[in-house]
Image 1 (cartoon, rainbow, N blue to C red):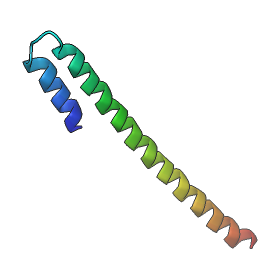
Image 2 (image 1 turned 60 degrees about the horizontal axis):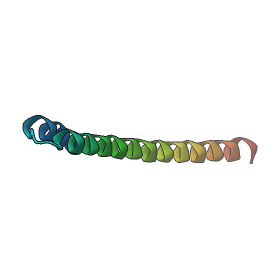
Image 3 (image 1 turned 120 degrees about the vertical axis):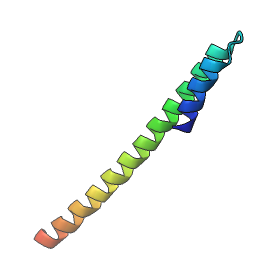
Amino acid sequence: MAILQFAWWFNYYHDFEYAHELGCVLLYTGIAMLLGVLASALSRVARALENIGQLLAAKLFG
């Protein structure tokens, strides 16, 4: 989140020739990092659900 805020600040307050491009790079980097964290969290949730399913199956059928 801090990278996204910094990207907005950098893009808004620094008005030199390549500020927009650098701001966009920072913005896209921040978005990519957020998506990576989200994917990691979803992977952990999926693993936890799989383990719960295996435990329930073992309890019911084992």
